[in-house]
Length: 391
Ligand code: SF4
Ligand code: SF4
Image (cartoon, rainbow, N blue to C red):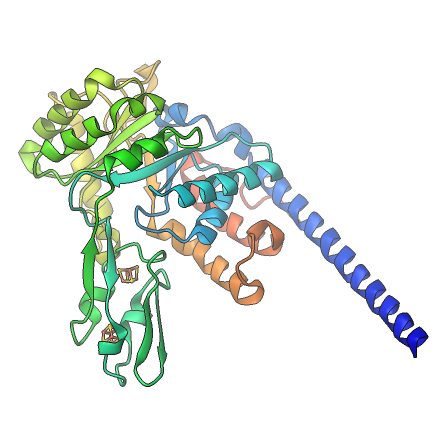
């Protein structure tokens, strides 16, 4: 009996060993394919350093969301978009999020030797649509509600279960405040809760060696809160490589607003600065026409003579970049919801099979996600060889 058991055990162990060995060897082969795909697409040679990308007009920013804090997805998305040659990744200003981002970037660089993208954290100086979360008490929802909130959420951030009352609700770290669920609730139960990032904890993050850039969202109504925030960060700004100011279109007053903010920053601004033009904040989520509006905004500002120095993701000449005589009018593109959607779909599918896995441990999914990301980033970076490589 003991022998049989022992024999069965060793046979079982042997089979397991063979399975594990096959699995490891299959994974290694798939990871080699991933590496070959990145190399054959030409990512290492085409993906230039971030400052050069701005100058050439092929800056690609992955917007993971100022309020999106799901560290598992964030790590995996950072890995995928680093492999795809993204120039900069932009995240919530939170220590665990920053660690997850850098872990994803490191994992990507262990697969292929690539230039490290810059990591940007996102903060606000006042109320801003990017800094809000949906909230509701599910016990107040009618049991027979068809739950349109759950269906409409692009981030799978609402999960409800029927018990004696509805249970669950908004998964806070996944909600990025897009606002889609607010109008669909037939009982008006969902509220938006806004919040502010404070200057002191932002300064602590900025001092980390793995944070390269900051984006400060401003609402264009006044500049006092911007001044307060900037001054509150003290000398931590000297650790930055880039400061981006996100501002909406406030018409004729836009350049005055920019000049005032620039004069606040100037005394201790020792890095690149960038104006991120946000024609209609969060508008990609709630309506069409956002791209046209932001381009019109960029063209108008590019022509303005009284604008302050700095580059723009959307169209102002790169006056601060060395060698800017060859600067592109359009510095680059920032992708948000769409970039998350195409990779997020594959992450969901992977998680349904393997739970909260590292994507490099499931290289078939990594390969699929990478192809999506390469197609998106490659449309800006001009990856001409995309799709030629055969596994
Ligand atoms: S629909 Fe948007 S605002 Fe509502 S829970 Fe989902 S991510 Fe948050
Ligand atoms: S749609 Fe409104 S009432 Fe229905 S489950 Fe969602 S929050 Fe509750």
